[in-house]
Image 1: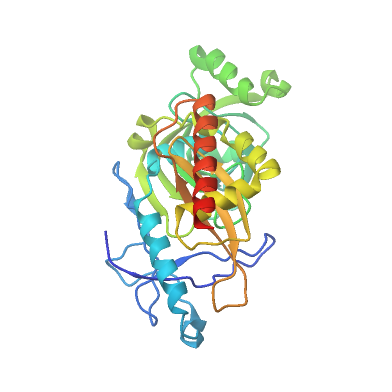
Image 2: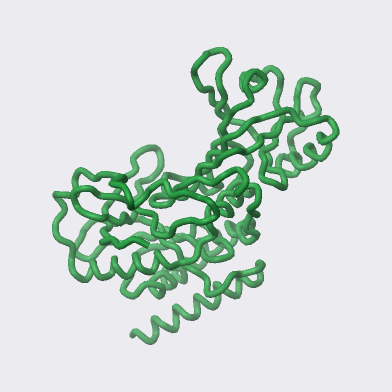
Amino acid sequence: MVSFTPSFLSICLCGTSPLYFLPVFAFNPSAITISAVNRPTHHSTTALSAEKDVGHGVRSAAKMGPIDPEELKLQERLAEHQSNVPKLGFPTDVRTLVEYNHGFAVMSTNSVSNSGFPSGSVVAFAPDSSGRPLFVFSSMSSHTKDLLKDGRCSLTIASKEFKGAADGRVNLLGECKRVPKEEQEAVRETYLKKHPGAFWVDFGDFTWYRMEVADVRFVGGFARAGSITGESYADASPDVISSFGPHVAKHMNDDHSSATVAMVGSAVEGLVVDAAEITSIDSLGMYVKVTRTPKGGNLPQQFKIRLPFSRQVEDRKDLKGMIMEMTMAAASKAEEAQ
């Protein structure tokens, strides 16, 4: 664990998605560096390292005025809280994202028609029990022709709830090969579970392919990025709670958002937020996008924080009980503070 001085710098992600203002942990004002505060294990490597002077430079940092002392203390408490919360770990995170994705991604191949250039195609896929993507491609598709000449490719998969740069995405690198005839029936069954309406799988010019994953790059949002080996990816298992986590999150956001606001305030002393939206839930905790205006500031900030569970939850009933426990504890704490 490295030492750092936290500073909430407003990083504006401009584009078609909404603006996000996220917490950034700065080592010094002149060379601002984002550091992963919870290093992954399982042979993963962190893309943003404290050992080198790398990161996102903010040109306007020098123009920022002094931070309110109370706000600085709050940021320190929040940074300490977030550095200690349990997370799934990169291999499980990646397998989970791929498993519960909507089943569409961007495949990049080495173009036959435009030699030397990469070619991108939106393709449907389904992961098998080892996380290997399965495809059924028409012989007329450009990416099929590319793969027949050079099977090396990559598959970029965004999380199901992806809305912007604060959300997870994965890039799988490997080689795509035809599935042997004796394995095609099992592959077909797996694929149709993900894409039940894919009636074209039995057309004569469609062929089954499978990607053997050699390397994985993962971005879980700001200050959380790295890579894992194909072996670590294959050995991991998807998080079971994440399969129905989005439904629970939607229910909480639609009907109990005030409870989430209270849970956030209870987790970190002095953290008062105007809004809190649960973006994902797993067996160890939940990610929440919060909106607040810092003390001494006049611009609202949006960033994600992680709320940990007191224990690992096992199933839907256990998750419901855990959220009720956290809700009641937050309400009791707020009542005592009054």
